[in-house]
Length: 415
Ligand code: CAO
Image 1 (cartoon, rainbow, N blue to C red):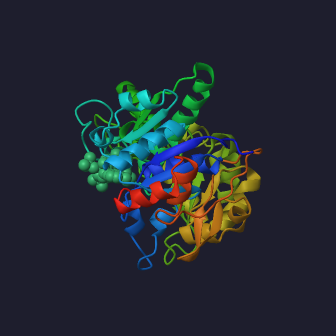
Image 2: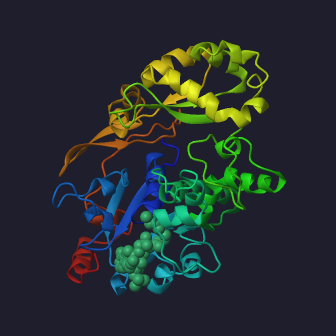
């Protein structure tokens, strides 16, 4: 038994945010039925294709552990089939532009009439308010949710991050909402509406920056590098470069080979508890007792001097040597790992976080498996479905159509 075995998900999602959510539910054992437009499918099947006419990695890496049914849900026959699917499923997930499902005739009120136990989950760019009708993609959400304004170098332009906190982050939030609603349904017997706006999801992940916004009212943010550099703070939480977001100052520092290797860097945290170990390691024993350096508060205006000295040392070592030396001394450091290094990392293969998948049209590719490990519900990554690969079996098993009905629906272009 898998944790979500027996839960049927009617997956109306596309692109990244929604598919991330339903893929997670599929990894935990839910039966995910992905509904796609006949002949077209999820737009990402054809986006960023690296092999002509083969489902892109964009699609395959976000749609594991799902079955694909094609359905034109705007046709009369398609609407009948969709109504039957709503009757049979536990959860319906969608991330269309605002109002798309209502225009199809499937408002939340209508869905409740069809199946009062249905949990109906949506991702939209914004919640109710001035922007609720906007279409939104990843970087728009990062900009609207506070991430871009607080990311980048001081004095530089607002910057988006590589981590897809708008899409995949919101998908993750939505999955949490869905399993919570499934749990409540075990007591209430009723379904409910689950919504997560991408702006809200990003803002939730930028919580510490809203913390700093309020701290600014009471004086400068002393752990930000700009404090030591004498750069005045403005009205809003500034961009903090690679400064640590917490109370233990940290920076990205060059390591041996940085001149030619763009990833020869380490993150280095000057955790107060191990300050003496840091001084010994970098050959600055005198800083252990020097009142200008001995305490965290004394160091705050001198962080550039501190990190320059540490960097003089890290530049004599590779990022992995820095880790080997610092780790036994409890000094928190982390090598900057490239995607190439992560793809080749044996320990990630062993835990199933990086997985090799066999696909009938593209051959073998790498993907990220389930990062959440349940001891009693192991995740096995099953390749993404081809467009409409499971249409007949779903219409037969779940909807209860006969072979003649299926043929008629196909003739009408409804599937
Ligand atoms: N049968 C018939 N019609 C279908 C269908 C099906 N199986 N599946 C989708 N459609 C229709 C929709 O009903 C919609 O029709 P209308 O415009 O007539 O209502 C149409 O296809 C297009 O849907 P869309 O507007 O959602 O798609 P888009 O490519 O124009 O916009 C996106 C994409 C992502 C900007 C938009 O869906 C959106 O804002 N979603 C919410 C936020 C979100 O999830 N963004 C992140 C996406 S990942 O980066």
